[in-house]
Image (cartoon, rainbow, N blue to C red; front, top):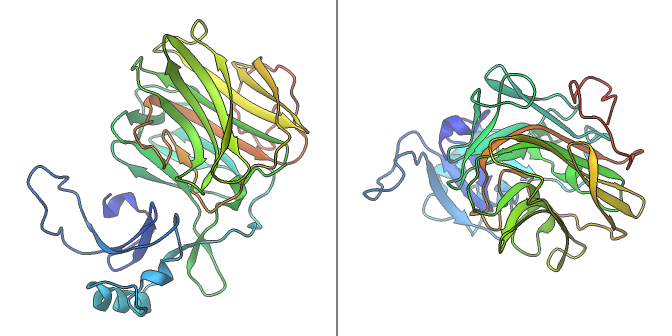
Length: 325
């Protein structure tokens, strides 16, 4: 992870990445031969749970390591440390994510205005696109993009609020387009899923034997999960774009492929909520479940009225006020 992959942060800031706190430093530390040369983060301390408050890492408490003197100075001069906040943000309306890739960059056109933090070779690319000119490219080598918010809290620190994506017992839609390169590995398309007890929900494309499945998994307790899957072996080919939707209305749910329902099931559980971070192209429990291909037009509706009827996927997904979703 490089400094330039953490927009909005400066040298000396303390950030939390996959449950570990780091300080951004102004030089590359000594690294072993054949390791990643782009290591512009120095470890401060391991902490329990995903994305905890980095105030716990900032040099004044007993958990700080030998880097505490430098991290202490950074905490007094910087307001860019991240913490998690499980309370609902006032920006978490019924459409907390509407992510478009276009013109060499990305934009969340929802009111929340989330940002992305890229890992590995994940990047905006003009090689393939579902709508517009670009999409999110993944190279299948531990690549993913974290969906982050940077909202100021009362004390001026930036709050990474993931409560927008806690589905609970709400009606919801999770929708995106994907382009599969044909590789054989199991792939997580979008997930709020980390090691127990921070499992919430995940949407996957995976192979068992000779059969490929689209699958939605969820948990009500953060550990034990239920999975609903549908055989798409004859429906999905490599090097082709597909639009996927998982939707719930009341206790009924459906998986759609290109606007047509391909699987119906009962989903009456209250889905677990945690501070886990939304991840595109992978999940944070098994980062080998990464996409080799492209993802585009990522949309989440959390609450409100949701239709379970077939639909025609056409035009822009994100024209305000999101007319056909």
